[in-house]
Each structure stands twice: as C-alpha cells, then as structure tokens.
Image 1 (cartoon, rainbow over the protein chains, first blue to last red):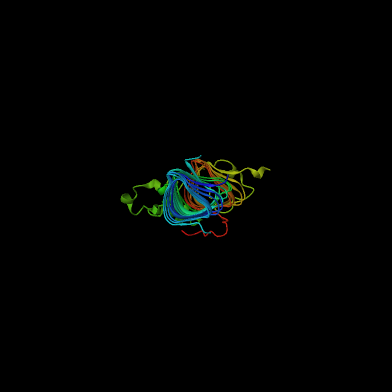
Image 2 (image 1 turned 90 degrees about the horizontal axis):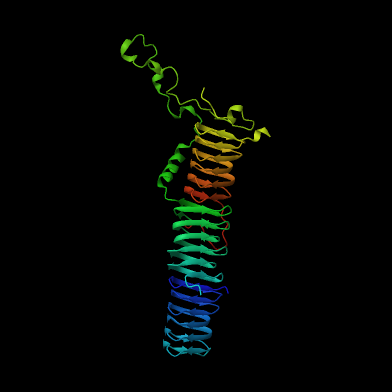
Length: 104
Length: 188
Length: 118
C-alpha cells in the first residue's frame, strides 16, 4: 500500500504532512499532521506534536497527540505529552506522562 | 518490512531537513535540505525543492536546488532539474530538462572555458592570428649595411614563419562543397 | 544525393576562422573561432574545437571549449571533454563524458516552485 516509511537511520527536522499512512522508524523533530494513520515503531524517536487518524506508538514520543480515532501506546512505548483522542489504549509496559482528554 | 529504505509516499509532504545513512526515495514533496550518505531517488511524480548532498542521485521527477553528489548524478528522461550540480560523473538522458552550472571537477577546463569565451571573437582575419614575424620587411636591401645584418638570409623566402597553408574557410562552406572540402587537404 | 556527404576536417588540419554552411561537418582536427551550421556537427575523438559553435545537432566525442548551441539536440559521448555553455532542447550526456560549464534548457516546473533561487 502506498505509504511513507521513515527508515531507522533517517533524521527529519521539520514538518511532515500528508494523506497516507506514515510509519516512523527513525527520528523526527518538529510537527506531524497526517490525515491517515501514524505508526511510531519501536526504536523510533519523535519529538513533535502528532495528528493522525490513529496514532500507534511503540517507540519514544515527546509531544502532544491528537488522534481523530484512537491513540494506542504499545508495550515499551514511552510518551511524554498530552493525549487527545476518543479512544485510548495504554498497554502494560507502556510509560506515559501527560494529560488525557477523551472528550471529543 | 523494508528496513533500510525510506520512502516518502506520493501524498506526503515534508518541509525541513532530512539526513540519513540509507537510501531515500521521494514520491511526494520535500522542501528544505537533504543530506544522505547513500542514494537519493526522486521518482517521476516527486518534487524536491532542496539543496541536496548525497552519494548518488537519480532523478525522474522535479528537483530545484543545488546538488552535490560524491559519486554520480543521473538525470533520467522525465527529469526536470534546475540548480547547480557538482559530481564526478553526470549522466543525462535524452528528454531530461536541466538548467544550471555543472562542475565535474575539471577546474582546468572550466578556466579554459572562460578564457576561450574571451578569445572567440570571430577571428575573421584567419591567417594573422599568429602575427607574421615582421622580420620580412627588415633587411631588404642589405647591400648598404653589408655583413652585420645579413645574418639570416633565408628568412624572407618560403614560409616557415607563416602558419602552414591551411584552407581558409572564412566565408561559406556552403552546400555544394568544392572538391577540396571532401578530402583531406594536402599542403601545397 | 552527392551533396549529402559530410565535409571532413582531417585530423592533421587546423582551421582558424569562421566556418558556416548547410553541410554536415565532421571535425577530426583543430578548429578555433566560430562554427555556424544549419546542419549536423560531429566532433570526433581526435578533434579539438575552441570556438563558438552553433549547429542543428552536435555529437561530441572529442574536446570542445566554448559555447555549443544546437537547435535540435546535442550528445556528449563517453570520450567527450567539454567546457562551456550548452544550449539545446535536448541534451544527452553519456557516462564518461567530462563537462564543466552551464547548461541552458527550458525547464517546465510544476506550479508553485520557484527556480533561480541560486
């Protein structure tokens, strides 16, 4: 499926936007606004506010998340920032610090 | 999952700096700066407005910006590129559109290009590009000034001084070329 | 048609001056000055051209210093050594060709891109 994959040795300093799925395995600093799903793989480091349809985190995320459908923090994920989503899943092992807003 | 290749999909836009140690394929849009130790590919629909510093660059799409490649730059037939380019090898396919300065590391040729641009005023006085030594006029009537001057008699005569007789083609080498134009010229 | 044979400037010939015409020209020797052709130009591997060059098509296998302008197309083959400004609607550069200078072609850019930010 057409989508964007940011590989593990890539560092992006800036803004990513678009209308397709995004998978991050590398490092992104800045801002992410996607119309579709955002996946932050384990090993990835994101220091950015993130907007997406669903946001699934297995790596490190520092920034605020706004997911239109669902935010999922998988085991081993570490998130520092505020979360706003109608559905939120925080798996056992995930680490999270921030405010949660499920009122959409 | 392709772990060692990054793809910026056609619907994705990135504005900022991208650095990395793996191949990068751009099908979407990137504005900013790209620095890679590997290969950057700009696909046919890709649009890059960025200075680019990579090992190899392959362009089928659009790139506006200055390019430095340590190995090779390939502009394929649908490439549209504007910007200066420095690389040891450059390949350009027919159909590629490019505008800018190319430096393949041959500084000497670049200097010569500047020099020849100055020299290339149409040298219509063909033969005289090397000034015929004026000596010919000098010792004509050596009668008066006997031995001292008349050291080199033969100078006047044939033409070791003048450039060898070559076809002077100032004027038209037009359609029905004379016979001499069709074969190698022999000196008279 | 007899007049379709190209004019050949042999490898031991030097021409200084202005060459113009409508006949295909093959250069194996040395040219300095100005070449203005309404036809095809071939600069062979043994040739050295230091001139302003205009032709319909230019195929370069030797050395050229000076601007080359082709109204139809230009090819720098793998043994070419060129320095100067190249202008043509279509330019091909083969692997191995050495070039330094400017290339001037019309480049159609998608809307919203500003070129010439150099």
